[in-house]
Length: 504
Ligand code: GLU
Image (cartoon, helix red, strand yellow):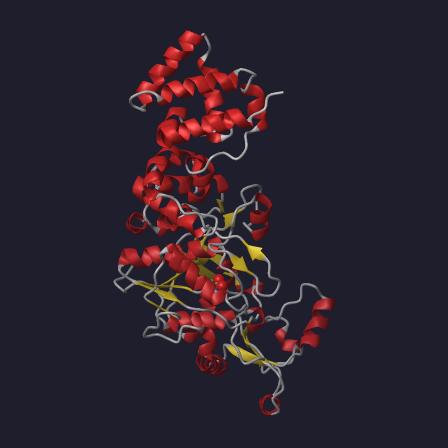
């Protein structure tokens, strides 16, 4: 790398919600920018008006903000190279399209969609290129007068790149090495459309040049476009940026690109935030709403394609910034594992202090309309936190510390509650609440004494007591529950169970 400052961009098209693969692309760009003290730019590529989706741009910005990916310049923060939305840069592209025509690297093509359709119907492999363009209606075959006549009459046209015949084009990719492509496989791509808008290819190259982008880091799906881009840089006489095409994210099962359908099928989100399709109203789940911490989401994305070269798996953003390198990005696709995604979330949940986790729990409960005593929660959460992956799962693990059971699990009743159980545990409970101190150790001793006296097994009373406290067979250590509930609540729950549970 020379001493030029790194300038990278994330350049999404606002055609829908941002796929997690897109977030990973943004992340890798961001990591390189921060590591090198360079600049990170957000450019919105909205030249294809037929695919524009309202709300998508805001969604993209909100998603990246949630992930902690910050921009130095861009559509939402401004900057010296703006505007950063391509639909606001139309005149710029006209000028550069004209320049390519003037220097003979592009031409007007007047073929109508119907004419092209007919050609494709007649020969399915048809492509507009050096061998076919000579027989078609374009400024290379028509006379100068005919061309200016058509232009004056505002006959619709497109501008196409004049791809040279018989050349080998070299794309030097930081991840894939040297990729060589024969120019004969490329078609004369449309650079400028009849609607007065450039295509992605022209706008992308012009903007990367004008915005002084040094590294183009993007998904592998753009690799087939890279030879055309290399040619366009040459046509303009510009230095091309360095290219790095990132491996695809693959389905958890089988091969192929990870899609929204895989998420629906296997029950995991593929989008960072929940998305409601403005047309159909269909809702797609998001990592944020599913309870993932943004740090966990970023961490799991970082490792989908990049390999740190060590066994370490949990990385903070600062560590990623320090350690990331394009050299360690794999060529092969990265298989997404939804179970591993959960594992990452669990690691982050466990990193929180009891105080922090309790705060999140209380906040989420109050959001759900349940007010929780924070001091009590602070004693409860440490007992159950190892059993969950998400904050939202805590309530199911600990609700019985805050509420009495309203019902008793029938299966457990059948198995654990015999005709004499009620009397037995009531007798025990009365002895326990009469103890001078209601602590784990004194309860334990008294229970042992009681069991010896009565000649019954530990399981009999403990399971019945658990049923009385929790309503089922679940939960942390029983005496932890009992001590935390306190004498009064303990005896009340025992009485309630004894009164309510009917044995057949
Ligand atoms: N607008 C393209 C996209 O939506 C950007 C590709 C690139 O980064 O060059 O992914």
